[in-house]
Length: 80
Image (cartoon, rainbow, N blue to C red):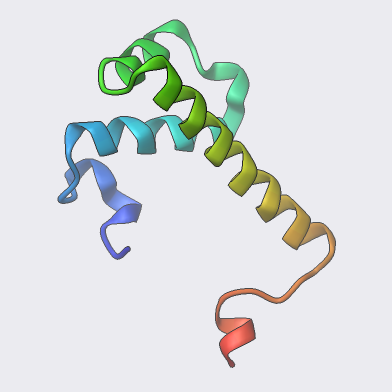
């Protein structure tokens, strides 16, 4: 977890980094997921895996939005 903010330099495989780059772009601006990014992802994931990964990323992004909209406690707020 501590390595995630700088995952490019972290202890992640190229496959994991491809997924993290994709997740970052999906979060920041999914309209900018271009052919080049998709090709880099597909170099490490089959079509089925890329679809499953896309679905999981979208679910977590949506969950974050719901948490914000409903002002739900999470993380340290729940533990504290």
